[in-house]
Image (cartoon, rainbow, N blue to C red):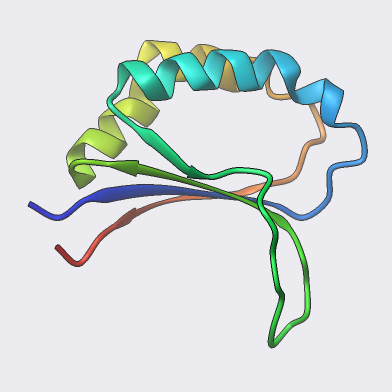
Length: 97
């Protein structure tokens, strides 16, 4: 079964404290859904477009599990806590194996 991944890219975070409630709720939802944080607040080396952004990578045992975790009641509560005006690019991606 191919793994599933959540990729979240935040173009800019001017006030990280505003994410505290979201981070706590999202962390609980990810854990309950079987996800494992692989990258969060780590170093980034940018190439091509040259944009250094915060990237969060979460791994799940399967693609369907990743989708179900996003659609879960727990994660939907976390999304409500995401501050208004926060910009991010969120994707669920199927792995190759």
